[in-house]
Length: 441
Ligand code: GUN
Ligand code: ZN
Image (cartoon, rainbow, N blue to C red):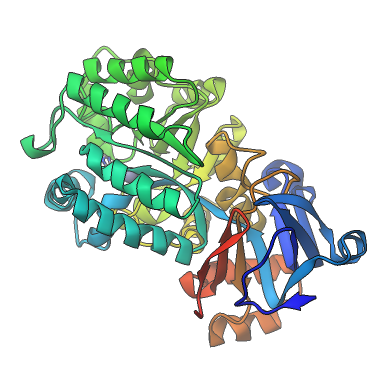
């Protein structure tokens, strides 16, 4: 039976469509990294991928199941945003400043409002809808210093059964008094949130010192203590984003080898550590990230919008460092991971590097999953993975339709769709085998 696109679907069911995912990094495995079926099928049971392959094979093996069928669409795994600030949603696109003045002029005053749980809850609701509208099913999310901001966010994410990682910002110096915690309150508030949320449903906690500028060495050490106390926690912070920020770090930590050395000295560099930006890293810092299995979240729209610099993807690839993509909203100028690819492509062009759409797809899905140490759970359609997926529309806009009608290969189609696409290209978003966003309904 083929069921209409608006209907409720009972599991198990089959999704039949043009479909693709990544099983490896195209930078190392080329086209072998990609699985693509012009007429493909995904079997979903109990919220997970039961099987994946050509429709011909799947339909005969699973006859009798309900089928959700799409025409002129492309299904990919749910996209993974490896760095974003939910409390900065309402200050996206704030004019004219670079990082340090942007923080004081725009970010800090906006974040003050999250002392109110009601405000946090309202923005969290909007934010999660915006993620789903853009095909993002998992994100690593900064809260504000207020623990209630993270409480509000997790409650909304839990409601939608999403896989989300978040943490309260820890910041005990070099920022307005109204946004400061202390070593003790930062530790205790984080601990209470961990006890309440970490490992509950699909939620995980990230210990979140804002950056080494706004934490004392003692606060960074208290973060390491939390990581030791609770298994499976993440460490989420900023690293080497902006030249003035890097100069300030040298003054604040004169005895450190370099910026990453500050986090390393505190015991914060491990395989669940995610560092946003990483633009100005030395060879030693790259080696340290690689040896410890730590990840970089590359944030293309943000790096251009707040004028931070050009991320060197090649040097991370050469050291086999895990890299995911982050929108970094509100420093980033779009929630769309497709638009992040658009800007990432141009950042690499300026460095004479071709960023293929396959690599773009990888960064937005499996690369993100690896960066978050979640390969085998999300990021592709391996059997047993959670069934988070996105239905992209080849006719999302007249221009996209016109351009794709001229495209001869899937490489060309995917490239044009990612370059031109945004939330209009996201026809539907599904999480854990349930539809959580429909563009037209
Ligand atoms: N560094 C410290 N805080 C922030 C922030 O909120 N956004 C960005 N992009 N960088 C930061
Ligand atoms: Zn950020």
